[in-house]
Structures are given as C-alpha cells and as structure tokens.
Length: 85
Image (cartoon, rainbow, N blue to C red; front, side, top):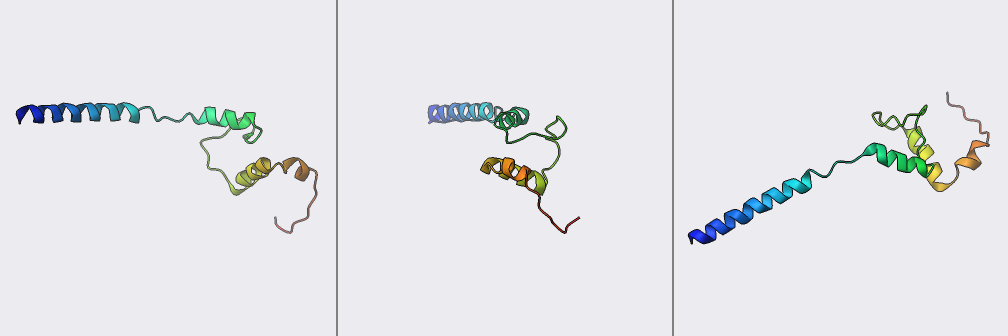
C-alpha cells in the first residue's frame, strides 16, 4: 500500500510539473501577428505604427472588413454624401 501511495505521489508531481511547462509557453507575440496581417494588406496601422496598445474603433473594424472582402479599392474612389458630421 505504501508503494502505491509513493507511485501515485510521484505521478502527481510529474503531472504538475509538465502542466506548468506547457502553461508557460502560451505567450502571444502581437507584433508578429500584426506584421503578418500587414503582409496580407489587411492591417496598416496608424502613422507608421500598429498602435496595438489602443482599442480598435468601429471604423477600424469596418476598414478591415472591407479589406478582407476586397472592396477597399473600389470604395476608395467612390464619393458618397452623408448627413453626419
């Protein structure tokens, strides 16, 4: 019985040590992801910077959606009137 407890304790310690190793490798490099989106012409940033520390606005999300759908080029030459200021 004592050997079974020792084996279970050793297995439990091994399990805990491996889960900590995998949990430490979950860092995300947002700059790398932004560069990848920039290489696809989906994410251009603001003034030469990606401004990853700022929250995206509705306009930013709309522009990205237009880029994904391929409509940005055709809409950049269009002139629309809107009453909003």
